[in-house]
Image (cartoon, rainbow, N blue to C red; front, side, top):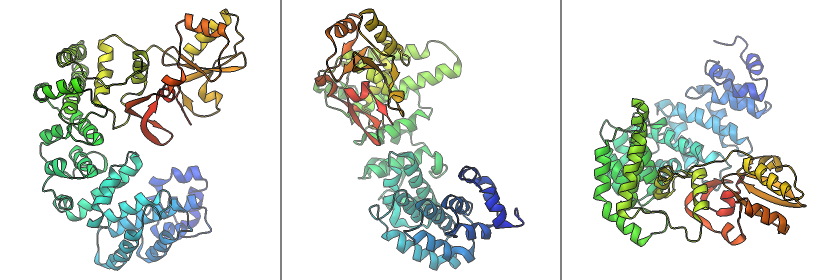
Length: 480
């Protein structure tokens, strides 16, 4: 036993929230009964109780299980503690030992009755994961939905639940819940994007899903998944293929078969996101660039990436070079946005990914550092005799967060100076001398009309949302 006076030693070890956060390794060796007793003691601070509960993962003591479950089911207790205790119990009961069957059945009834709407923040994903740990095949779809979540911590909870479910029943039984005989069939035929996405993740076999998929070459199925109607599924397939040694010949052949679809996409200029065969061909070209970059790095040879990108450029020129249509958004704005925000989120149009690669081929390069353009604007205005303050990065101006622009006080007005390129914006009209000086120095004013246009096809994280943003929000970005 690690502690001769368990509770007293635990309090010493967990004397502050920071120490409790760092104590996981030591707590895994601590006396389980003492941990459970302290975790269930409402007189103790919640952060100490949670640390003790986390030390009980997979080894909840029999004598304390009922008391631990009471804390899980008590809506008045702290959610973080309830989550930790639920994980400790579910991971212990997941082996389906007969002695725990009654408790497991009672827990499943309670867990199945929980809904996202009735659960406080952070509990829902723990509930779904616990159902997987307890071998509840009825939770298969909920686990797939959770693993499809764009928030990684939620997706990880879903994947951990899937891994536990497969551990109890085997992969074949779990795939049957989605009407599939194997992963390739699930990728092709599952009606829900979340199930197809999970099939791709299982083929990747990373994180919690390591070793769950049978040893098989799923390259062909993953290539076909690039055509998936859900951009997030195609994006995940692209990630999976990036980690595989797919030959350049295979990728060129895959793209060539879909050349006519690319030509049609150029003629039709479909709005983003591009999906289907044309999107798959574009994704294959992106992968070709990645393969060249890996080869160049591995062989320490110069020129492999440039040579391959030139070949991609020629291939696209022959098809008309599909780009995402952004009517009335100037090319300079477009390039500044792509340089800063690619690859964007998982729904990013693959045409943007390829355009980002080819910006280097066409010689368009980023040239900015924090406050460089803000200081230049300040100098230009001072030379013109306009009263101007010191440039202040938006994070400092708002006393929190970060962003892509600098603020300047200009004759009692606020000028926003984009640090991505020479763009400026002001809520109030600047003195004529200031506007003329800035324009003469190559700065472009972003007016209200241009600022309001949306860059469709490039979702960007912004205050908890992941969707295409307005030009203003992209050039003058601030995130708390």
